[in-house]
Image 1 (cartoon, rainbow, N blue to C red):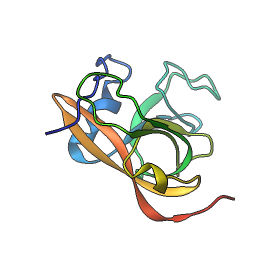
Image 2 (cartoon, helix red, strand yellow):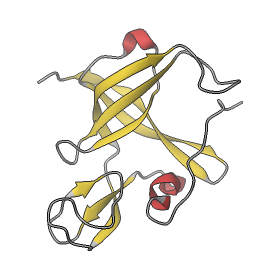
Image 3 (cartoon, rainbow, N blue to C red):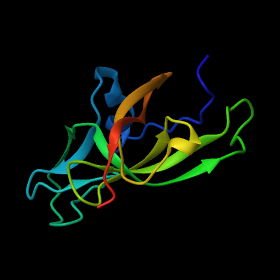
Length: 138
C-alpha cells in the first residue's frame, strides 16, 4: 500500500511537472531564449523575462542541499518519520526541487548524491529522490 499523500492540484502552468514521471523523466521549465532552468514554473523567465518557456527533460540527478526529519504525520495514516528535502538539480546552480528523500533519517547528509524516482498516485507522478552513493560538500 502506498503512503498517503496530499496530491497537488493540476494547473495549466505546472501540470507537466506533476505528470511527466509517466515516462520516467523529470521535466523542468527552461527558457528558449537564454537557456535558464527555473522551478517552480513561471510565465516569464526570471533571468531575461522572455515568455519562451517550455518543459524539458533533465537528468533527474542532484544533491541534497538541506532536509528536515518529520516525526509527526501531516495527515492520518501517513508513515513517519519521513524526510522533506531540498534537492539541488545537476543542470544548474540554485535549481531546487522540494520533495521527499527516500532513506532512513540517520542516512541523510548534505551533499549526498540522489536520483529521481516516481510514485504514481491517481493521475499524479510525484518525483521523489533516493541516494545513489557519493558525497560532495564542496
